[in-house]
Image (cartoon, rainbow, N blue to C red; front, side, top):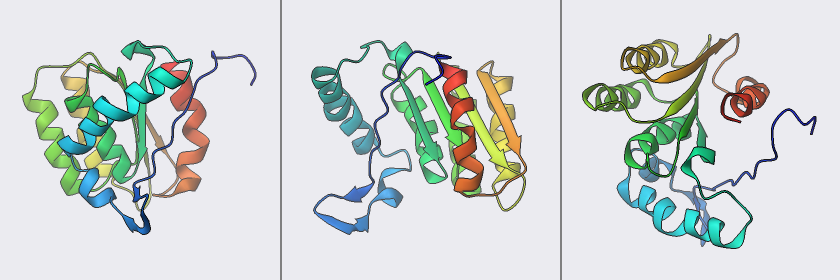
Length: 169
């Protein structure tokens, strides 16, 4: 609104089954699920690109996730680097799952990705997130890391949206 960045289009994807809203599919979709990544690659992004006035460049595309969605964003960095240049993770969960993804990043050659990672200082995955951040930095990734005095909730994540936008745009 203040003109600090160019306007951006934000798309929110609901992890619930659209035919049965009480069915949340996040546990099956967010852990490096290739079918879910395929949905983004073959359906969602092409539809958005066709129907809305958006840039077609991967350099203008970022995926953001909070909690388990943050883990999914990290997975998409590995699975879809040709579609996303920016990966934003706020309090990526859980520590055990993040360790699996950390090892995947550690074993792979660095990808052309810019990363934003935030974590709270209480009741969050602070130790696992710090270790993941260190791995990324050791591999040479461009990482913005923010630790806030907060916990694993929207009171932590919401105020950081400006930081995410400024990091990438």
